[in-house]
Every structure is written in C-alpha cells, then in structure tokens.
Image (tube, rainbow, N blue to C red; front, side):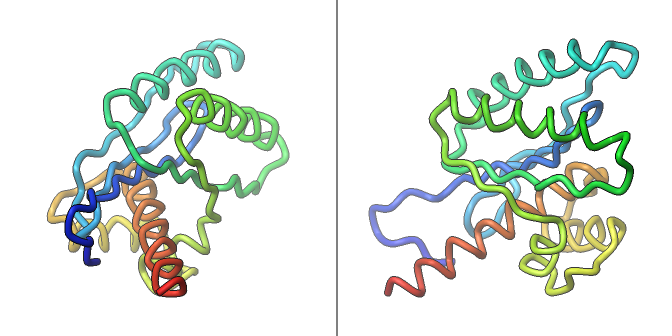
Length: 165
C-alpha cells in the first residue's frame, strides 16, 4: 500500500465486539500491527453494567489509539439468546465511536476473512495463524479477528482509491 508524499499513514482500529471479551487491533498501512488486545468485562456483572463499562473502556481505547477509522464486526447470531446482548454491544460501539467523531464501518466476518485471507470460510484458527504469519506475533482469538477486520478495511480503502484513480 503506497502512501502519497506528505500523506499520513492510515490507522485502522478493528473491533470484534462482545459483551464480555472484545478483541481489538490497531493496524497501520503497510500493513503493520501497532497494538492489539482485549477489553475484558466481568461476566458476573449485569448486562447493563457490562455495557456501560464497555462504553467507558472503548472510549479510553479510542483516545489512546487515535484511529482514523474504526471497523467493527457485524454481529452474526447463532443463538437467539445472544442476539439481544450483541446488538446492544453494537449500539455501544456505534454511540461511542460517533461521540469521538471517528468514521465507523461494519463488516461481516465472512467478508473480512475473504478480503484479508482470501477465504470467507476460514476458521478462527486460520485467522490466528494468518495474523501470526503476517505480523510475527501470536494474537488471541478475539484480537486476531479484530486485526482481520482492520486488514479488510485497509483492503476496502485501497479498492476505493484504485477506483477513484
């Protein structure tokens, strides 16, 4: 990915949201992994408490990482019991990123894996392996998924730039 002279390197914050463990990864063009980790919320707390703590911690992460763009995974629901919590977490992501005036995009897991790995059906283990090979660091499942989202967003931005050229 070439950056024009005088242009700054784009910083993409990928977020794999969940109500207990949210993965995140900050990726710059190159690509290079700047940092990655998880936001951990005590599962013994009520959902309302977890959501408020998540929003607070996400806000702190946005200030600490200063991303140009945030990309989050669109919820994929396998159990209806998880649907309400995941959509509330998504709403917290939307509100928090909006409050920080940072562009936000949502990408499905399949689309992110297709763009970043060339295989939309890749497993979480495949994503971890690919991120390890690319960045030479072992990432946990959630942080690896977040890095995959950031890479997919970089790919999408490059596609837009090529189309505009």
